[in-house]
Length: 191
Ligand code: 5GP
Image 1: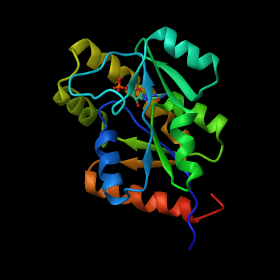
Image 2 (image 1 turned 135 degrees about the vertical axis):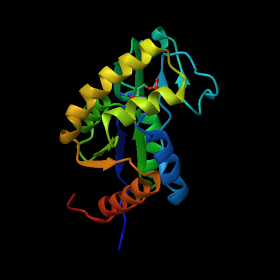
Image 3 (image 1 turned 45 degrees about the vertical axis):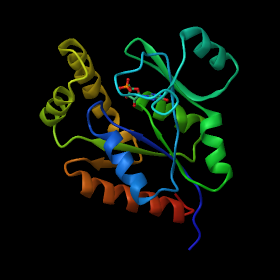
Image 4 (image 1 turned 180 degrees about the vertical axis):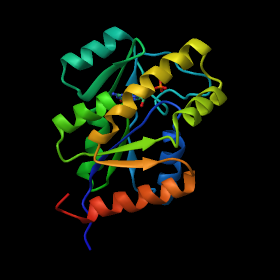
């Protein structure tokens, strides 16, 4: 059966474990591309420039917006984040599917610009579990955790508008589901 390269958006509230699932997914499917987003926020400890994100200042970001260099971009927590076409195209042009790990607002913008995109939402098993995971991560202050939780609740309400929902209760089960789902879209021309 032939496979066609597809663009997959993976979204979900902060702390849901998207990053871990994407890493596990790419262990299983090393051919899947992953875009590096641009952000105007400061690097967190342990993040690597041009691997975690491309870090730019607001002026540099605005210049790229004016040049139509972004497939999508959005504002988050007072900073800007975006995905460059130049991050996506090299994969699709060489027949490889690509993953964008971005927020819901960005996901809807991708759908408008690229209707063939498949939007996958990663759900926490419960709101309580999400808050516990976010606190456990320890990278944010209480105030930031509260902001991210408020934002998470808004995002959860939008999940039904996504094409697919995967619940991350067990990371291995969730990864299996992602592998199956992605393969299904790659091999089914009708989706
Ligand atoms: P963080 O600051 O925790 O790395 O990311 C904050 C939020 O920005 C997350 O919801 C993350 O998915 C989202 N994000 C990361 N990269 C992009 C991007 O390129 N575009 C959009 N729209 N959101 C992004």
